[in-house]
Each structure stands twice: as structure tokens, then as C-alpha cells.
Length: 167
Image (cartoon, rainbow, N blue to C red; front, side, top):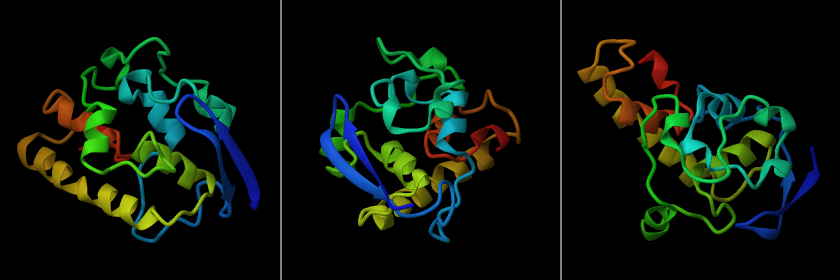
């Protein structure tokens, strides 16, 4: 705790933050993700492209089994094998991007998981909670465990650290 992280990757240069909480602990009581960032990367999220130039920022073991593709977004790497991502330009247009986390929610979550606490935490946790409406739709329209039902929606849910394989 109290360790400073300096970020220099394609999207962010010279950004610094401090880790003030233990890794994977002391989360807001309303924020209880099913999956860690490491588990998400190993399952296959964001077509493998999301984290390819910022591996130095996070623990090496997060990337040992990660499904990554530095050349392009590859939906076949996603757990459900479908594209469930929107372009970053859409996220920016909708105002979902905070300047400190230019890659969006998952970058925020990785840093939160590592122990950063930030003024944007309340908004990001509210966004995470809003995904429950998609979970309700899958539960209402699919047999439990039928991973072939609504795969795109299940992949999108997985992007938010909810384990949609179990719905």
C-alpha cells in the first residue's frame, strides 16, 4: 500500500496513481464482482486487444493465461466467440470515459482491484450495477447454463466481471 504506479503506454504517458488498498480487497460494499481481472483475461474478453500494450502496469501472472492478440480485435478469443464490444469512439461520445482511465471501465476495474481509489469510483460502480438489467434478461429468456442462448449479451456481461457462464 502507498506504492506509486507510473503509466507509459500507447494511450497514457506520465500518468501516476497511488495504491492505497490491498490487492483485491477493501472494495466498496456495493461492488462485488464475480471475476478478477486475471480471470477475465484468461476467459477471453474484449477480443484480446484491450491490454496488449499495458502489461507492465499489472502483475505478470494476470497475463500468463490471458487470451490476447496485439495485432487486432479477435472475437474468436472471447469466451463466447462473439463480438460484444463497441468502439472506443462510442464510449467517448457517450461520456463513459474518464481522462484518468482512457480505456474505460475495465481499466478502471484493474486499477481499483490493484488498490487505487479514485473520485470516479462511485460512477463506475453505478455503471457496473446497471449491467444487472442484462443479467435479468438472460435469466428471463434462457435456460440456466445454456451458454448458446444470447451469447453476445453473455459476453458483454462477462466484460463487466459478472460470471455469465453460470446464468
